[in-house]
Image (cartoon, rainbow over all chains, first blue to last red; front, side, top):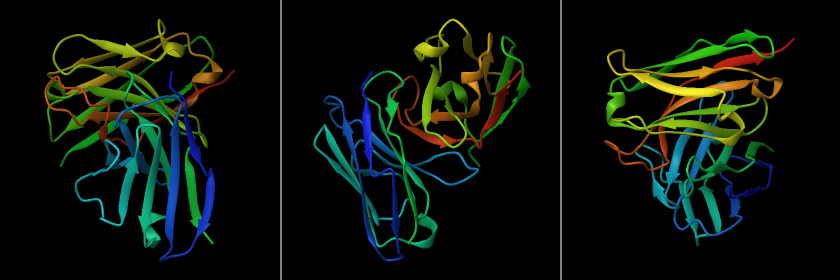
Length: 107
Length: 123
């Protein structure tokens, strides 16, 4: 299956910071890259789908971009509720594959 | 309110079986693909299986093929995951998720998730 390499695996940031998380696909996946946020004890929450489309009711400080291989999740102005783990997921193949996750914690 | 609630997890010995349930409310499972995704505690996510909204089409990740079966009861608006021949590597939190596509349109995007059910395989 297609390997998704996500980086960094963790980062420390402060409220108000601009945070960037990247995800690289093992081969081209067109636009089929999604981003999820997960907090402890909860199921994942969909943030962005098809590279750059913001899920309903997700704040506009979250944005996504990509070129079919390399993808980026950006949080512009980190808020206290954004400290969590973020996962990319490719939906190009049946069932798809997740990246390894990026934990964003308090600096 | 659109909601998914998983149940049926627990502890089982290697080689044993468990059936997970996912009760949906606020929407009909016949209108969406439904998925099971698992997460080893403290580790990453892995998509396990999916079932079509109307019809019988299913898919499984290679590591569970022949051991796990996904099904649904439309009258109960519930999706199931029957897990047989469980191994230590199946220990995980199992999440039920709804595909964002309507009808039998598959997107591979999960827009609604449950809180998960823990399955522990241990001798």
